[in-house]
Amino acid sequence: MTHELPPDVSIARMQRDRAELATIIDRLARVDGTHETALPALTLFRAEDPGARMCCMYQPGLVLVAQGTKQLLVGGETYRYDTSSYLVTSIDLPVASQIVDASPQRPFLSAMLRFDARQIGDLLAEVELPELGGEVRRGIAVGPLDAGLLESMLRLARLLETPRDLPVLAPLIERELLYRLLVSEQGPRLRHVMTAGSRSHQVSGAIEWLKNHYHQPLRIEELAGTVNMSSSSLHHHFRAITAMSPLQYQKQLRLQEARRLLLTERCDVASAAHRVGYESPSQFSREYSRQYGAPPLRDVEQLRRAAGGPARG
Image 1: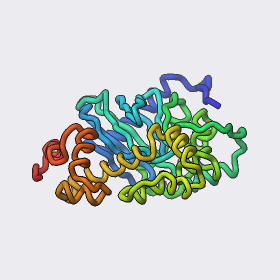
Image 2 (image 1 turned 60 degrees about the vertical axis):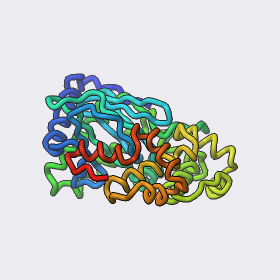
Image 3 (image 1 turned 120 degrees about the horizontal axis):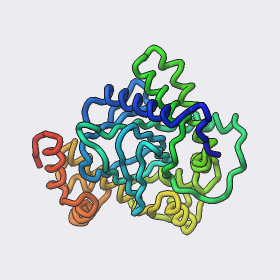
């Protein structure tokens, strides 16, 4: 089901709503980066320069762009979204993200609402929806933005400037946003993951295991048994949902955590490699270089210089 623009709501109204959302984000997120808000599920993001490709983890959620353009690379697939579209993710996904349209005069501005599984489950118990098909869907998609979704996100952002209203009104608007998604063409993507016994739900369980045990050796047979799947079924459906194999997913988790250790805890390369599960520091360095375009110490030095911090190895 798609939401057509009602006759009394014009394109100009969407443009005004988008401009107001951009103004709110610009006012509350004054410097580049991700900004937490008084509403724990809502984060704001700002970037004044396109910059380099960054590797990070996207949680299940909805992203609306108020200004600019961004693209994500997921397992070799590219997802591009801007002010005319929205991004939805139904599982935790390691991605390579890049801002492609931004400047100091017109920074990239976006808002992300992280999904609450309990809220989605409560809604599914109350709303009558068409029966789900059996096909497995990617855990990420870009859809065309409609007036209702944009207006709901704008009302949620407005609440950030009236904190006393947040406890009462924010849950209602969050629920509305989730409802609009569930009845949209992207709804089955969320419902599959939430449906116990579905392949998507089982893969979600495998992802949760990998997140908690990324530093341990990966044995597909054991992982498959943990989520009640055969090895071949797990491999097939895991790739269908994430665009990568379980081993590739684990590698992304390891390298992202190693980068964090090197950058924030100032580990040496061998210690970081060991802590994330590599037995060979040389293999770690090779895979790190392929992932981030530079050996570990040089990469971290570049990151610290870019952030204006001391470039200590």
